[in-house]
Length: 375
Image 1: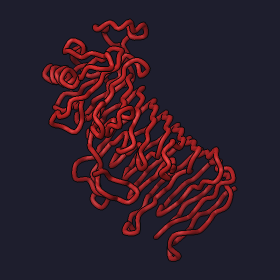
Image 2: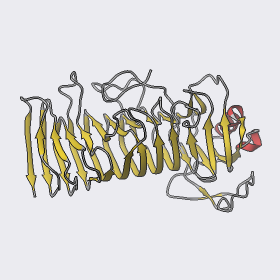
Image 3: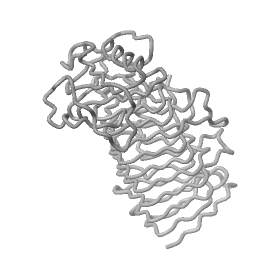
Image 4: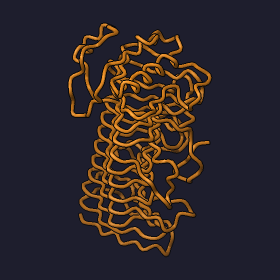
């Protein structure tokens, strides 16, 4: 079963994954050498330890061989050494094992942080060959995943990336997601629920290309705090900000995908939530939904939400505002698209220096709507 964040049904396949941040100086030449040189330090923390080239453990990037065991052995060796960089040279690495004992073909688990590093997202491809099976799971704090492509789209696989850890980084990566699962699922701690939230903290996504075919949450950012998502180009369903706090989304470009299932929301911010900032979000679909809850969700409110520089480039869509307090919508250009107020309890805040069509009232007639508009 999978969770639909909009109606709060049950969770989907769980997978977790994180990436390291060091760029190898010799990789630009990428002549397929199996032994890269020492990585160059970057802004992201690079785990101490040695380099573990997956080809030394039997991996073959020939778009045919099963690499499940080889990747598992390389990760296990890095864990045993106290951490390190698991390096994946250029190539197409297929995972076709029927059973691995976990939901994903590649799992980073244990106690030592691992950097899973490719030669570049246009050079290193990890491809799940089994339908509905997850690809990468990350369960270790301070893990880094970078410079590769994760593909569960080609063969109808499961979640491309599942993360259940703290202070992880996903950098310079392309993710291709299939039609049946969240492409990216940051799940939050086990046992987290909207009425009793628990949080993973410090997770970072930067420079992501996401193309997915899911009908619900292509990118699920659930139960996260002190986290950030930056520089994303997303084609597909929506970014689901699900019961988060102290989270920032910056420079996000959204385009609806080819799936004809109505999930064209841009972003969907589900309460309870607090201190959410969205800056420079551009959508060719819906502007987004803020504080939207199901019929049994009355009493859950998004608080302290700032949306700055939202741009809607297509017509016939809306920006929907649900239960939210201290909303600041500023410097936005929605064109002739309407703002729909669909609150069950409260919609309070300021709309400042924004261009839009009309403000349309929906939702509960008893809801307190106190939205001031400053031209």
